Length: 405
Ligand SMILES: Nc1ncnc2c1ncn2[C@@H]1O[C@H](COP(=O)(O)OP(=O)(O)O)[C@@H](O)[C@H]1O
Ligand code: SF4
Ligand SMILES: [Mg+2]
Image (cartoon, rainbow, N blue to C red; front, top):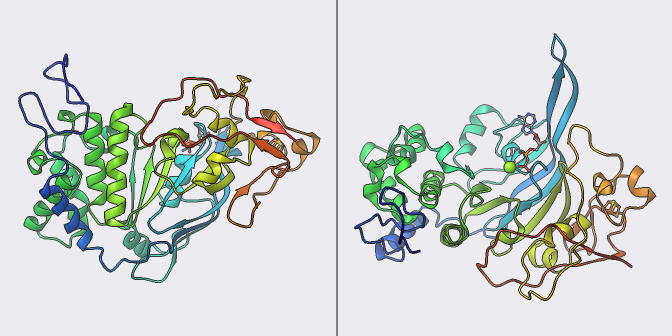
């Protein structure tokens, strides 16, 4: 990316480590390949790609709504309400949906950063029997924490501005207590190199880095304890399009070489298409569709998924969808509508939709699940494959979504 016209004090807003007057790091350097191989060496015993890593069963996270002088509970925000899915080792499982539909709460409840109200989260670790993170004891949970990490949208808020980058990355290693001082220093240098930064960046503070670079620091910190699972919560949403692509490339490369599993949370379907294996679409705290990525993109079976997809840029600009709007706001999870939660916005809603909640069911016996009474009858528009890495922020309103046959 060109830095022409940039103020000399402004951080470089791309993935290179170059500052004015410096030469950019060669991101395909031998040192980087070596650092990634060294991280991968710790994981050599792990050859079980495709096995189940995580089973989420009936997960719920309700937040109490309190009122009155004695702050009694008058209701609940059902941010996550009875969601179930399975994540395979080595895959990217995306969770998508509009803002407020419960994606972040689901990610945090899976990692037990929010204590779930109900349900199970079964984690199949490499060396131990499966553990239900919801009911396991504190010692077990602490052991499991090194296996599951999260990367946030804004790495600036997750990095302590008063700590050097090196200290931030080293912190989980220091708490873990297994490595000595020099080994931690070496590991930090290796992690920085693996994410395309330089070992000497360890002594700098987060404000000296651009958004993309800070996200790389967040990734290095997440990798410090060699986790199996990383939850990426809108991890590239705050970055501009070209930097998004670079950070996604880095995540893909690390996944390939370290056999990582990602839960990738995003409101933007065009971002998840190229990196995901499976996608779960959430609406008002519920999963309304789960499918392998190609199936969901080419033939969505839930009107809400189709509406989200209609905002994804098409490879053929003449292939415009009906400009009919998906009107209305996402209903509040504190007071969701009756029946199918989507009926207030769905162009295909019938009387039954207002009274009966459709269960999430397998439509093809091959893992394409949707929660719509008319999933078999609807012919919904999908999108053709868009060229890799053509990430665009949708600029059009959500359009028409298909027809009821
Ligand atoms: N700590 C909380 N207390 C009360 N409500 C919350 C809390 N955290 C999230 N919510 C509510 O839960 C719903 C889902 O939020 P969130 O998981 O952040 O959605 P998303 O990540 O999809 O934008 C929203 O209505 C939000 O206001
Ligand atoms: S159940 Fe009815 S309201 Fe809900 S998505 Fe299907 S057609 Fe629309
Ligand atoms: Mg969120």
